[in-house]
Length: 271
Length: 190
Ligand SMILES: [Zn+2]
Image (tube, rainbow over all chains, first blue to last red; front, side, top):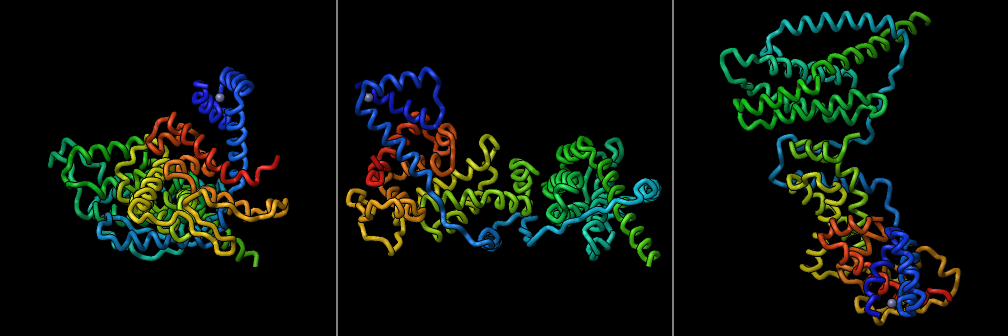
């Protein structure tokens, strides 16, 4: 009988399927000789089986959203909220369905355009970028928003990673405007991730996600002259090839935009 | 799809959207556990909201060593137990439609249902039997029992969530199943 306590542990192992063949044999042998454990085992098997029928009352369709809203309200009331903390609630993410026609021609056209625009922007100084006030204007659709966001981020990161360590002033430093801009971008970038189709726009969503981390790092810098942290951020920009990916995605978005424009004009012509 | 850790890191840096996504992905398991423990919708709603507020405040302490869900389970358990200690609130709110019995003593509960297969088959009734029987479990027994039976957590994971040894998880589960059987034995057919 002194063995019985150990056997109870084996019963639980058997019940949860976490038992070896030898242990199972040990259990079986004991159960054949010990009536008390046999009864116990029968009882816990029944309880285990029966309580599996447990169900919870169904909740209404809007229950989860409502809970989320309540939580948001509760969190917003709290004094300690961090810089970008603004929970955004949108009923349904709008889906972009890229329609693909005329692809080869458009791709070439787009390539030309992006090269030109890249050339144009590379010739700009970072400070000009920051002064761009069109940031807050409204855009017709998500694609435009995404493009605008990528463009802004690219210019921010370009200006930021172009700091030459050898040049004077010796330490890389960020301007208030750049930090401010990264904060504005975070809001847009995180909203866009919800608005985009996670499957069709998978690469773009991933890029925005990587971008968001970098922007958050910039926004959260304790000091604008924190050389070490700034270097880390620059490093992660390089490591993730963020600028290259932004260029690729911009190309893709431009591609889609031109396609739909092309579609519209061709439809008009048909009419 | 972003991993929980990616989302946590973003939320930690101040991304509200990332935190919202974490809540969205886990609000169901947290609410369900809260409901299983409290047995009441309102209490479950209150508890799960408190859990996420706590999680938000303590996000820095999540290091990704355990699953994020386990971390939330642990917070839920701790807050439930603390609430219980503080308010000693009634664990289960009974529906009035059923026969009266004195709960929380365990011993005196003996419903008068006829041994009718139709009645037995009724899901709501079964549920009622289960939730009533659970009132005899101690807080610790209930925690282990609920995580194992209703949340399909493995024994190791339960040990991790509750911060107790594997041996204790097994003996506690054994004890709670025996107690449950005793409460439900009138339904056991022979
Ligand atoms: Zn025995």
